[in-house]
Image (cartoon, rainbow, N blue to C red):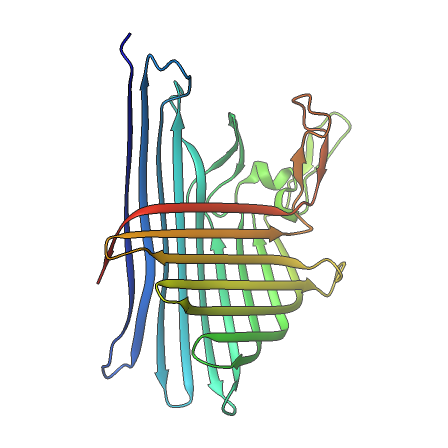
Length: 306
């Protein structure tokens, strides 16, 4: 009996952290990674499935200093897909766009008056896998826009904490079917007893509240870099005790000149987002409500540093 197994793991990481000394005083840098893996089985007695996966991640920044002003920009992109067995379609494993721009004017050595804007969404449609006919998300469904004014505390070049008592948060659900279902906290459609829509669901939900954003980036030990961000938001107008949480961690490890590893995690909690679950383990979702969400992505492979 012929037995063969082919496992190909190829990853490319780009790690860059540099300062550009020019008339604009820009500092740019970041970390990026692209992973590819394949498993091919032929007459494999131990069992298993063929698989093919791609995963990419980029965490970039660009800062500009002029006088007492500091303009900071952060862009985080992530996308991953996997194909297993005889399935013809690809399943999405990661998908995010996260952009933050913050401007601060120095009040003293460590504090600045600051304004911040943040935008989050995703690139492609998401489905209730393994059922790829039920769409549960998409580009601008949802999208989050946050505008905030407050004070920024910068202890050193590695840590900053933005505190804002004045924050406007907008949730956009562009897909009307999802809006009619009340997805991501927007007001659902009003229906009659027969299920016919009387009033379409809202595509926009606004909240007013307080916001905290803490950011840390540093090499914690030699060849190990840590980039972490914690965001907290409380809606003054409705259930202020329910705190929205977004905590992201990116750990970059350089084993040697050519081998590296990255570990990224994200923890989310939003009281306005209902998560379906099968509490009876019978294949039918019978529980809906807010739950803690968690995602982890590990990449190991070849690195190239500029």
